[in-house]
Length: 161
Image 1 (cartoon, rainbow, N blue to C red):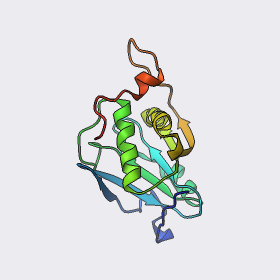
Image 2 (cartoon, rainbow, N blue to C red; image 1 turned 90 degrees about the vertical axis):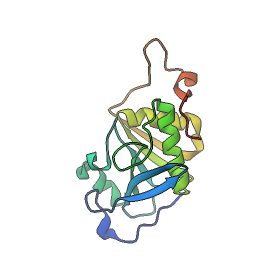
Image 3 (cartoon, helix red, strand yellow; image 1 turned 180 degrees about the horizontal axis):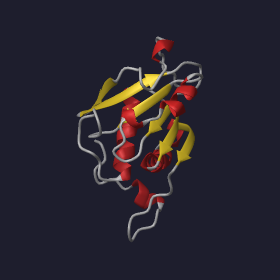
Image 4 (cartoon, rainbow, N blue to C red; image 1 turned 135 degrees about the vertical axis):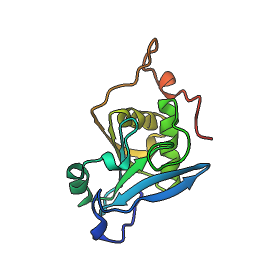
């Protein structure tokens, strides 16, 4: 089980937690981590081009009262460096590299909109990494002319090396 240590309950808010950065490969990822409790960390994956500031404190803050919360900006979004991936699988690869950089071996994930599709790809690629998935305002992946098969979903022309 993974754990994230947060030093102060004073930072237990989406709006007051400091933005932090972690480097994995050529990318520097922006994130906020806050909350307390013994629970498995809950990673929040945002909609397309969503940033750390798009999360509503009325959603995130009550959850952080009993467990660590991690808000994440993927490559090329908001304060994170790098190029925005052009495939969902590439987005999932970035999220997994981010979790690896934090040395987390298991998390729960809440995926909103496109973040929910990214969460599904992570579950297919590295099922042991995710304990539970919460999908909100999302659906299954489908590209014009393709079905949402596992093979198509995990195809990543721009996978993080």
